[in-house]
Length: 69
Image 1: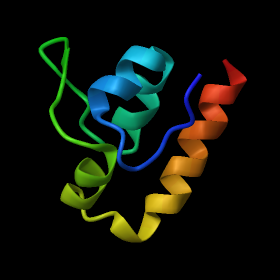
Image 2 (image 1 turned 120 degrees about the vertical axis):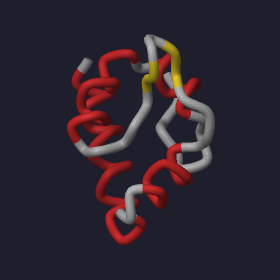
Image 3 (image 1 turned 180 degrees about the vertical axis):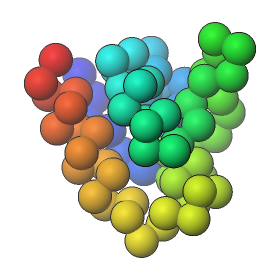
């Protein structure tokens, strides 16, 4: 499984790690609309939410959750 990086598209993350949809939504990162992954990269979505200062923390947390699977 690929490590989650900020330049990965939301679609890639959802396809490889569907278990992360709910945690991303709980973090405020929109990743699904009408059952389909949204366009853009993880970095873009984090910045859109004004959480650029938490980018590393979010990515570490998502990787940790993915490893638990």
